[in-house]
Image (cartoon, rainbow, N blue to C red):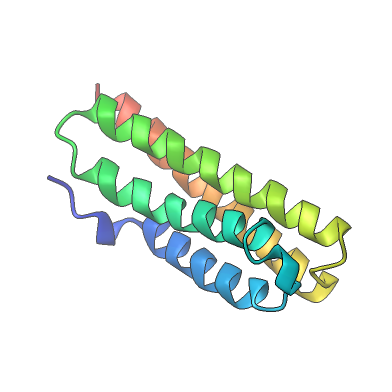
Length: 119
C-alpha cells in the first residue's frame, strides 16, 4: 500500500479543492445545485481518486485511478472556463487557478508515466 499523502499531486489537489470552495462561495445562489456543486465535486474527486488509487495493489489499478483523477482535473478546468464566461470568476481569480490546475495536471500525468514504467 502506498502513502498517498507523500505525493505532490495529492497535496496540490487539496489546495485546488480549497481554492475552488473559496471561489464558488461567490457564485450566484441559483448555481448552488448546478455549477457550484459540480465543480466542487469534481475538485474533491481529484484528490480522492489519487488516495483511492494509492490503496490498490497493482500498478495498473493505481494508474487507472490516476487517469480518473486527471479527467476530473480537466473537468474542473472546463467548469472554471464556463464560470469565467458567465462572469462568475474574475481574471484575478481565474488565471492563478488555471495555472494551479495546469501544474496539477502535469504532476498527475507524470505520476501516471512513472507508474506505467514500473509494469
